[in-house]
Length: 187
Image (cartoon, rainbow, N blue to C red):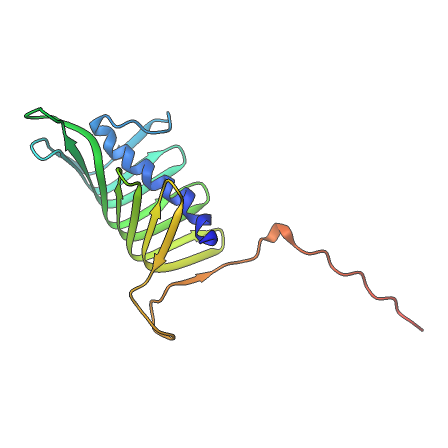
């Protein structure tokens, strides 16, 4: 679990920023005051269902965080007591070649879902996490963005089975051990 925190904090922050960026169309405010830039080939808003769909090469940027996907759909709550009108975003779904980048880490998968009420982000489908030289792969990454608890899973079971969770971690290069002093040579 500790090693997963190396990815989840920044990668999940990027996912949340992206979710909030898409939800900005519904007046959801981001934790950051930096501007949010959403670009897509198309945007469709279905007010009767409180859905906003960005499709075609979607790219959402804020600060140094970026999310790309084929399609991003934001589901918002209906305003209580109002016949029409949508409130805050409840869920964001990104589909197709989802790629999330923050300062020094990346995550990719086929689909990402963020649910605002429980702060759970789920990335599925050939999930790859990269930070520096470290790499982890699996089928499903679940992150609680409040606690930074994370779980990387695979549907494959058993030793030698392809597509099991796999990670490669490199030692910190800045913590190299001092070379031992050479032994005295005797004549």
